[in-house]
Image: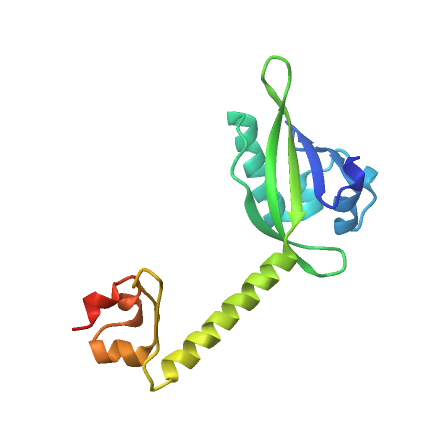
Length: 173
């Protein structure tokens, strides 16, 4: 089952050696899954990424807690940089001792690409609005300013950000 999901899954033991990597992770690294057994994260992921992974795993082994999910980057076997959302989970024995750390990384590259494109569009819109010599001001149904351009901000002697959130009645006579 683990080999059929579109996420990278690995299991390391307390000596920081891989007990298992699934097919998705093996493909990303360009190796046979069996080759990962007894290798360290540094061996498979390189010094920077491997040491970062080992440090996080060490914390999980020490405190037995699942840390917050985090984003990271990995260059796959084709040379493409992938954005990953990674979660590390402790596996415990019946006495409650952490015996392994399971790492699951989901590829969020498409989402990150869309976020960057949206941010670029926002920046372009902001530039267009701020270069417009006319006054641009949007107000929500509660009468609060949601967007203001540089021209109207200049007229009030403030920045556009200082207008956002204020009530329209507080800025007009």
